[in-house]
Structure formats: structure tokens, C-alpha cells
Length: 451
Image: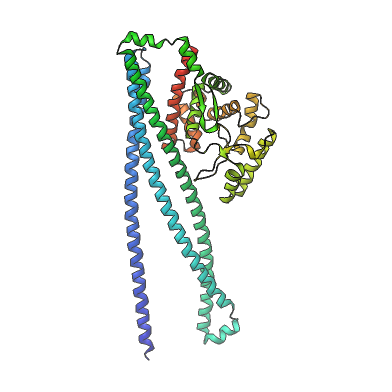
């Protein structure tokens, strides 16, 4: 048998296999690069469209502000309503673009996680194989190795193989640790995007309701005045009966089961505002939007939706921190922790937020002394609406809402929902909704206070 020929054929096969493997990797990389380029182009187009719509919204904001400075008249009021309607139509368009952007981001993250999972499985298989080979060598003594090696060169070659295997094992272990870390990071990012998706869907529903409200308001104004300025001026003067109706209308925070008259809600917001420098109408706007977005508010249990949720996410220290804080809060209030409602666990994260302000237990404890000093309640309760109003107002003031400017309130509202990511489209959409409700409540407050 011609061993030399066989060796040459084997070498040729190895070279051919390596070439095909390299070619396959190159084609895969090329396709991946093209797909990434296409995805980036789509994302850039979405960002460009969103930026354009955002700029148009700002233009309408400026028009509305300028028109409101004019002397009160029917023409001015119709113009303001028209601009508000156009603006809200643009906001719906912006929301839809943001939804597309987030949905694309979720698909992208899912694929990245899938790729990491595949890579992780492959690395684990390679590690198992390397350890298996290493174990085989471990079972052979140095004496047996020398006897089987034939000559010194072969023995040294086998020793070198053992050394290389050990290096591979260490490399695979390090690679697996890095992949696990990346996988966890990508899953957190995915949950953030899922949360944004839910918020945008809720905001879209709110925005459409707000648009219909403005259209109805405009139609009613035109019908009642018939285009007559004198009729408009007489309509502006509310009767005592109409003022009483506004005072008695229901201010309802559906998600947390809180309902009170508008007058009572205004008094509580006014109290919180006087203590923190926040505009009462802005406080009412925050709570209204929070409540209407609060699909998961209430209905949860601290053990399942807070503690166990963080345990399942392998965040034991966070689980213990929130558990300790929640039990401290309920114990100080003489409440049964198992009967107190918290936010239900959504599909993208954990629940456990308390009351109308929706503060997590550890966050509430951080504000506890400030709330207590302003309300006089010792201890303050997350489930007390006055304490909740004050707690939210402290946070909003810390974020700039006590400036009582549009810019300050917009940033504070954005930070209320997104923290440092307040410039993101979802946070800006939320802020616009809050400001629209604040504008509505300001009109109600002006009516009952005679301003």
C-alpha cells in the first residue's frame, strides 16, 4: 500500500474541506452584512420620517402658543382647536412610526438572542468534546505515554496536544461566560423594547381618544355659536350651575380604583402643588395618563409579581431588597402585606409598584421622609391618594416641573416614565399626552376658580 499517496489524498481532502468551510463562512458573512445594511437603511428611513414629523409637531406647538396670546375671540378659539387637531393627527403618525421602530427593534433583538443561543450551544459542545479528550489523556500515565509514543518527537507532540487542549478548554469557558453575559444584556434590552411597545400601544389609544375629544369640542363650538362672535363671548361666561357640574364631575383613576369629585381632586393636587411648586393641572394630567395606561396596575400580589419575579430573573439581591422594603412599609402601616394590591407582573418584566403613584417599595422608602414632612402623615402610605400626589410631585419637582414652563414640564413627564431616556420617542409621546390632559384640566380649574 502506498502510504505516501494516501497521505497526499488525505491532505488534499483536508485542504478542500477547509476551502469549502472558508467559502461558506465568507458567503454567510456577506449575506449577513447585506441584511444588516438593509436593516440599517430601513431604520434610518424610520428615524428620518420620525424626526420630520416631530419637527412639524413643534411647529404646531409654536402656532398654538402664539395664537393663545391673541385676544380671546371665536376666530382665535377655532384656530387653536384646528391647530390642536392637526398636531394630534401628527402625534398619531409619530406614534405609529415609533411603533414600527420598536417592533423592528424587537425582531432584531430576538434574532440576536437566537444567534447567541446557537453560538452558546456550539461552544458548550466544543467544550464537552475538549474535556472528553483531556480526560482520555488524564487516564494515561506518563510512563504509558512514553511507551506508546515510539520516539521523543511523538511524545513531545502528544504533550503539546494536551497543552493545546487545556488552552482550548480555558478559551471555551471564557467564551461561554462572555456569551452568557451578552445574552443577559440582550434580554434586558429586549424587555425594555417590549415595555416601550406596550406603552406606545396604550398611548396610541389615548391619543385617538384625545383627537376625537378635540374634534367634538370644535364641532360643538361651531354649532353653538353659528359663527357669531357675540354668542361665543356669552358662552364663555359659565353659569353657577355649569360651574357646579364641573366641580362635581368624576375624576377617576380607574386602574387603582380611586374616584372622587373633580373639586376634591383639584384640592389634593393644589395641596401637593403648593408643597412642591408643581402646577396642579400638571399633577392631574400625570395621574390621568398613568391611570389610563395602567393595564397592569393593581391586581398583583407582592410575593408572585414582585419577589418571585425577581428570583426567577436571577436577581435575588433585588428581590430581597424589594421584599424587605414592602414588608417594612406594610408593617409600619399595620397592614396585611398579602392583601395589599400592587401592579401585576407584565410579560416584559416585574410588577410590585404601589398605589396611584406607582412607586416600587424601595423607591417609596427613599422618598418616605420627604413625603412625611410635607403631608404630616407618619408614616405616609402609598395607597393614600394625598401621599401619592405628594410623592409624585416631589419626583416631578426634582426633574424640573417646578419651573412651570412647557419645556420643564415636558422633560419632567418624560423622566417620570423613562428616567434618563426621557428624549426617546415613547417618553416624548407620553409627555405630550400629559401636557394635553394638563391643558384640559387647566381649563376646568380656570372655570371653577374664575380665572
